[in-house]
Image 1 (cartoon, rainbow, N blue to C red):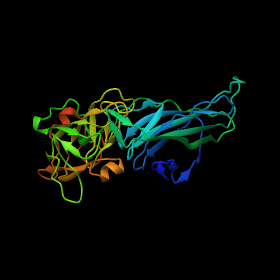
Image 2: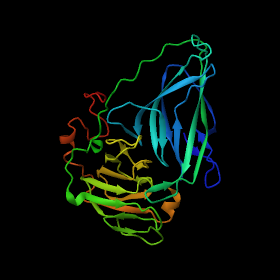
Image 3: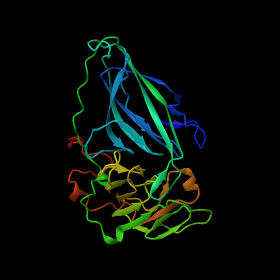
Image 4: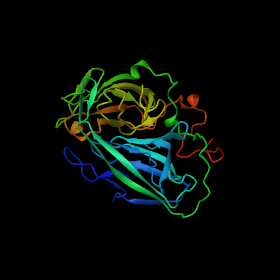
Length: 335
C-alpha cells in the first residue's frame, strides 16, 4: 500500500492503498492482521499515524506492532510503535489489532461495529542547508478507514509475545564483528548541488559518461560506512542490505535494524555495516529522491573476488545462522 497517484511541488500527494483511494478495510475486532506497507513514491516521505479515538461513540483504536523493515525481521520483534514512517522506496511489516472503545457519554457501553480513520502526512524536502532539511511542502489526508464486522463483542486474540527468528548467515548481527581498516569508508551525501555520492573524499556526478566505482569492495567481507547527509538524502543500496550500528535520537531507525533505505529526520550521520555476500560486480548506491538521483547522486561499489564467497566468520557471530535457502528442518526457525 502507498502508491502515489499525484505528487510534486504544488500538487497534493494522494495515496492509493492497493490501487484504491481512501478504501474501507473490514476487520474482525481483536484479531491480529499482518499488513505490509510499501511507499512506491519518488520523492515523498510519509508518516501514517495510529488511529486515534474521538469523543463520539463507535470509534475504534488500532494497535501497531512492528515486525520487519525493508524485508528483514527485527532482531527482536515485535516493537510497539505509534506511527509508521516510510521513506521513498521503504517497506514495513506491521501487526495490527483493532478494538472498539467505550464512548465518553456512556463509558459503560461500547458501540459495535466501530471504525477508525488512519491519516498520513507526506513531506517533501528536496534539499538541505546549514545541517537542516528544508521542508517545502507538507500535506495531511485520509489514508483508509478501518471497519469492524461484528455487532457483538468477540474474543480478543492474545498479545504477540517477543520472538526472534533464525537468520540466514548473510543477515547476522554485525555489531560485534571485527572490520578490517581497509573496509571502512567515509561516505558523504552533500546538502547542496552538485549532487554526487563521495567516498573517502572522492566523488563523481553520475551522468552521461561512465563514472569510476565509489570503491573496490571484496566479496565475503564486512564493509563499514560512516555516512554523512542521510537527513537530506534517503540512502539506498542495491543487492546487500545494511545494518545500523550507530545513530542518535531517531524514533524509527534503531541501532541493530537492517535496511536498504534510510532517511532519518533527527539524525544526519549514521554508521552502517553490510555483509558483501556471494555476488560480485556492480552494487548501486543512490539517493532515493528522484531529482537528486537524476542530477548525479548515484554511484556503484565494485564487488571484487570469487563469485559465491560468503563471510567466513558469520557463525562465530551467530552459531544458529543458516547458509542455505532455508533453515535446517530439524531446527525451529523461531525461538
